[in-house]
Amino acid sequence: FVLFFAIFASVAVTATQNSSKIQSVNGRDVVGWVEFVTLEEPGIIAKAKLDTGAKTSSIHAEDIEYFTRDGQQWVRFEFEKPKRPAKHGMPSVPRQKKMIEAPVKRMVKIKQHTVDFVQRPAVDLDLKIGEKTYKVEFTLTDRDSFIYPVLLGRRFLETALIVDPARIHITGAPQDLL
Image (cartoon, rainbow, N blue to C red; front, top):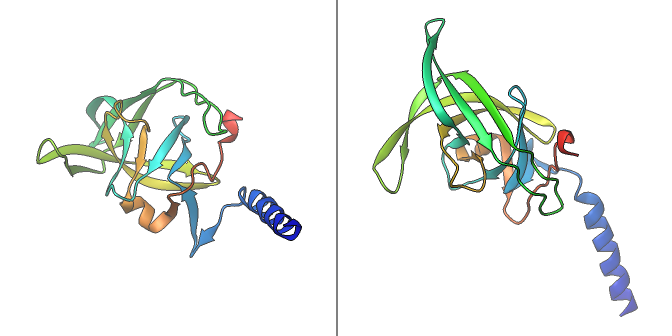
């Protein structure tokens, strides 16, 4: 019994010490199915769901407006989310309201359960997860009815990250929240 307890205790200590290190497989970081993300240019910090069942990534967008800048189609949208309480040992996320502008990369057909397809604008935004920044193509949609304002889908995940479905917040909270 004493030997079992000693082995169990050393495994628990090792697991605790290693949990702060991000593992990498073939150059792709292993992350949880929920992680904090930062859109640095507009200064947004949000929780994202990393969903291998979704093909495309999407971001919460309200009041979407199209306009032309330098002969190219652009979009302006508002990202507004209420304060989120601290949960799972992570700090709370403050209320955020930001206006974002970006060139429209393309229009994407999204299959939905209620209708055959809807068209959404897609934009590229720089997204930071942990210590790495990625260029991610997001479709714009109102995600008010969802828990997470950012969804990262397979198109992004297949080349950037590996999702551990048993864990969350592997990368920790951004410094701005601590």
